[in-house]
Structures are given as C-alpha cells and as structure tokens.
Length: 141
Image (cartoon, rainbow, N blue to C red; front, top):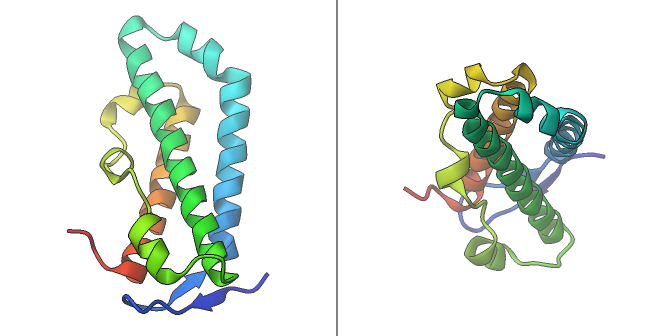
C-alpha cells in the first residue's frame, strides 16, 4: 500500500501512512496478547505498592492505542472523501494528550519488563502521531 498525500488547508500536507496503521495494529496485538496471557498473573505477583502503577500504565497504553487508531481511521476516511478536513480538524483531532503524551514514569522500572516495553513503544507511537496531527492542523499550545 502506497502512502497517499492528504492536502490539509490548515497547515502542511499530511501523508496517510499505512506504516502508522500497521505499527498501531502490531502494537495493539502485542499489548492484547501480553495482557491476556500474562497481565493478571504478573499484576498479582507485584507488591501492593506497584499494583496501582501497573494498572495505570495498562490503562495509559490502552488509551494511547485507542486514540491513535481512531485518528488513523479518520485520516483514512478523509482520504476516501467520507469526512472533510474541516470536520476532522473540528471534531476528530488526536485526543487525550494530557494522559498519553507525558513521558513514561520512572516507576515503570519497578514493573515487569514487558509492560515497560509496551509503555515506551506506545508513547513513541503516540508522540509520532501527535506530531502528524500538529502538522495537519497546527499546534495546540
């Protein structure tokens, strides 16, 4: 699948990149498999003081991936003429930055290795898509 340039009247042309979609799907599958197979068991083995951090990171990973996938689907809808750039800019920008954009906290080092790996990968992907959103519609600062 070739990248398709989506011209935004708001700022810069934004490329719909199948790689972002594929990276998101791969990370979704990895996270789902990890949480399904190991999540509950690993959480129960943690000392009480780290269980809250584990649950928080699990939720933040899920929030990042959900937000990214929604954004990618909107970009695809724009590419196919189902949603206008104006509507996307008004209603469908990447959301939850207050939760998803902050760096992975240091306390993740106290959690099982793979949740830290998923947290970092999801943060990197979210940051990448955040920059694409800013490119399409301008910064929100």
